[in-house]
Length: 101
Image (tube, rainbow, N blue to C red; front, side, top):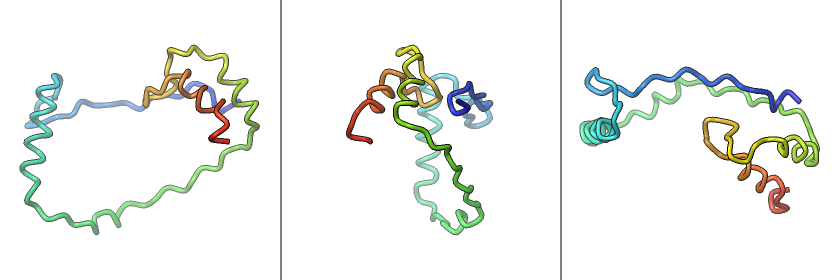
């Protein structure tokens, strides 16, 4: 099935503050802390959001619950299928739960 094939991860860049990459957690905290404090008193112009175009929703191919369960059963429980780091074991529990279907 196409929806379970390997996906390419997007390229990422480090967060930078004052022209320097935030490599250590303390650098990242300083960047967030200083950015928040400098922006705290500024007014927000929400009309800026009007410039963004919403993307059209993707249409999913229909599949049976059993197809999904059979497909994900073969994956290692300790691996993660995507950048969100949800493990296969967690996804398997959700899919097998009667609450969500």
